[in-house]
Image (tube, rainbow, N blue to C red; front, top):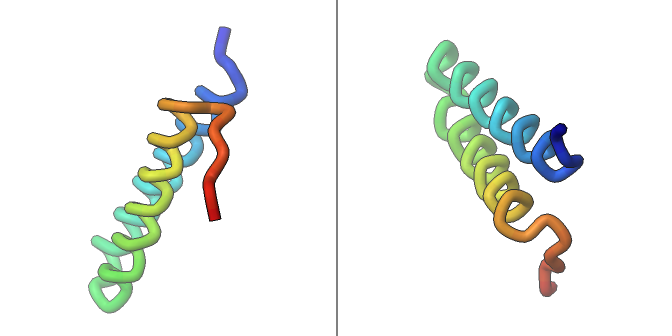
Amino acid sequence: MVTHAQLAAKLLKDAATFFRTIGTQNPPLKIQMDESADVFEQVAALVEQNPTGIIEE
């Protein structure tokens, strides 16, 4: 059985992979796509490490 947090982390990682693929296929967008992928991977890590954590502003 998969938790909501595990599913969310997987979807975020899949999105990061998508962004990296787009960047590879379209060099003018590579930097922007890699930055987006990095953000999605960071959020996936947050969800995995502390699913109910709070982000301080």
